Every structure is written in C-alpha cells, then in structure tokens.
Length: 246
Length: 107
Image: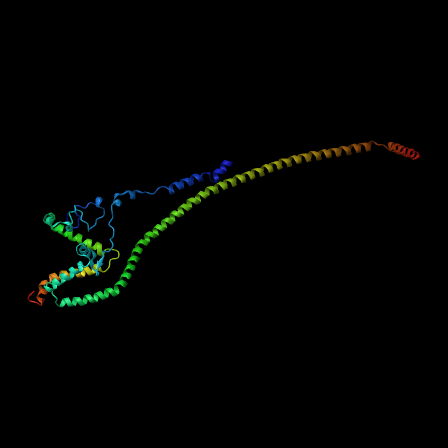
C-alpha cells in the first residue's frame, strides 16, 4: 500500500528530471571552431593615412627629414616650382589663374564647411556601424537571457525534488492518520458489539429473575389458604399483645 | 592565369583571405633600398610582362584605396589627390597645346 502510494506520488519523477537535465546541458557542437581558416590572419581595416595641406602624404615629407631637416621639403618644392616656372615647363597661361582662384575658393570652402561635414559624416558612419552591430548585440543579449532562464528553470526543477519529498511525507502522514482512524473505528465497532452483548445478557438475566420472583410470589400467595391467614393474623395479634405486655 | 583569376602564387590555406593590395610572390629588395650599382640587375630581375605590369598597377591602386579611401574615417584627402593627380595627368596630355602659350622666346 505505502510503496504503491510512493510510486504514484512521483518516485519516478527524479529519473525524469535527471534525463531532462542531461539533454539540456549536453555540450554544443564545437566543430565550427576547429576549422583551420579561422587561425589565418584576416585583413584589418587601416587607419586613414596622414596628409598635409589636405592631400600630400606625410611620408613624402618624412622622406626628406633624414637628409635635409624639416625645411627640406618646402625648400625643394619652392626651388623645383621656381625651376619649372622660370623655364616655362609649367606655363602660366589663363588656366593657371583660373586654377588659382579655384584653389582659393576651395580652400575657403573646405576650411569653413569641412569640420561640420566631417562631424555629420562621422555621426552617419557611427550610426551605420551601430545599425549593423545592434542586431548582433541584441541577439547575444537575447541568447544570454535564454541561458539565464534555462539555468533558472533547472534550478526550479531542483526545487521540485524538495516539493516531491514534502508531498511524499505529506502522503505518508495522511496514510498514518487514516490507519489510526481506521484502527480506532475498528476498536469502537468491536467495543460497541461487546457492549451490546453485555447489555443483552444483563437484560435477559434481569427479566428472568423478575419473572422467577413473580412466579414464586404468585405460587406462594396461591398456596396460602384462609385458615392459614386467620392463624397468622391471630399469631400476630398474640405477638403484639406479648410485646405490649413486655 | 586568365582574367579574374587569383595570382598563381596565392594559396588560400597559407595566406588566408585574399588581399588585392598584397604581392604574393617572393619579395625582392625594395626599390628604396637598392644601391645604384645594383639597379641594373634589379631592373633585369623585374617581370615586364603585361600581366605583371597590370598587376603592379592594380596593387598600387588597392594600396591607395586601403590607405586613403576605405578607412572608416577617411577625409577629403583621396578626392583632392584625385583632383591634383588628374591635373598633372591632363597637363601632360595637353602639354603640346599649353606650350604654345609660352610668353618668353629665350630661357
């Protein structure tokens, strides 16, 4: 009886819980990590090259420094352009002057608008990158949330073990209480039957006694004749007279 | 090696992802470190086939792209370099016509 109750109240559930946990925490497939291509260096996006005057590479200036010092590149540019102009290799025709005015306009435009445009474009670049990254970040947070939930669920399932134990104790208590109640009721039933038998026997004896007494009295009364009555009364009167005399 | 193929020396399992700015052959001494006496033999060692020349220009173009155009925060430098570079190119192309605008007869 008790063992069957134990089975019903979840003796098997412990094995079920163990099975569920074994599948939930079994290691993920790590095959993707062991491929060889991930160990090779991937190209990295470079920082923008440093320039002077908006477009001349810094390296060109540095190439002069070892031989000429910091003024070398400027001296070279000045002397070389002097040579080109004085020999009219570079001809100062009308395009030169229109180019000069364009250069002034562009320089002013870049100085005036450049920082604002740069700030706006930097913000756009950051927003664009963030837009691409956000999905990954969200997905990661989501998965971490799911892992946390899973761990919490496993933890709460461990709580179920305690609950089942408590329920089992509860059932044992109920069974004990039932057993005692039935013991009591059996005792009471037997006692009431015995009491009944006792009462019955007593009543029968009483009635038999009463009937016997009545019968004897009736018989005795019937056996007394009128003579005997008269003798008796006379005797009584004589006794009373004797008593009175004494 | 046809059009659109990777260079013959490129091996994905050794070099990793393809970088169009990188030379995958055996590197020679850089031109900046060549002594004048070795310049002749250095030039003789160069591969002067049209494919190799095109490859060299392609690598130079991609090196410029990687350095000035493709960085995350590239400035106005690549555009100005393009402007001044094309100014130089077109000056050379048009030099025959421009030289007729010379102001002085004797230099």
